Every structure is written in C-alpha cells, then in structure tokens.
Length: 108
Picture (cartoon, rainbow, N blue to C red):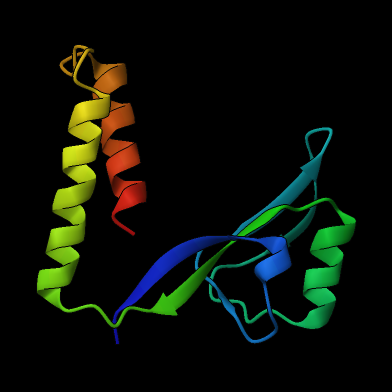
C-alpha cells in the first residue's frame, strides 16, 4: 500500500496515527523528547508532545490516489513553484537546493 506524509497540527493528532518522520523536540539545544518514524501515537505520547510545546507532527497516511492523480498533483505543485521562483536565478546552488526541497515537500 502506498503512503504519503502529511504534516498536521498537534491538535489534529489522534491515537493510532503513525509517525511518517522522526519527531524530536529540543529545548535550548538539548533533545528532551523523541519518537522514531513508524511509531504509533498513543494518548500519552500526544500529551507529552503538548507538554513540551510541540506544534506539528508528520504522519503517514494511506495514499488512495491513482498514479495519474499523483502525477497531476506533482505537475500542479511544480507549476506553482515555477511561478514563485520565476524572478530568481535557479542555477545558483542555494536557490536550486531550495526549489528542490520545496518541490519534494509539496510532492509528499
């Protein structure tokens, strides 16, 4: 089964959701809470994240879109980014890296 990643507000997180990426919370540069990708959230986990002022979590959800729908969504995201980045030199390494990172984020 295909999955896709979604970033949601902690207030939307529910028990049994699966983390799509590692979750790490640090305070003053010191990690004080972490969970691995693939971890199934519990009510206690969600409470611990809230107590440590976590705001967002990345979850993995089933992707019910067809391959054509995925390709269309990616094409739309790329077209939108092309407009946003139209006034900058995308041959500069930093700009090219930013474009690539945003496109990767938008394609999940």
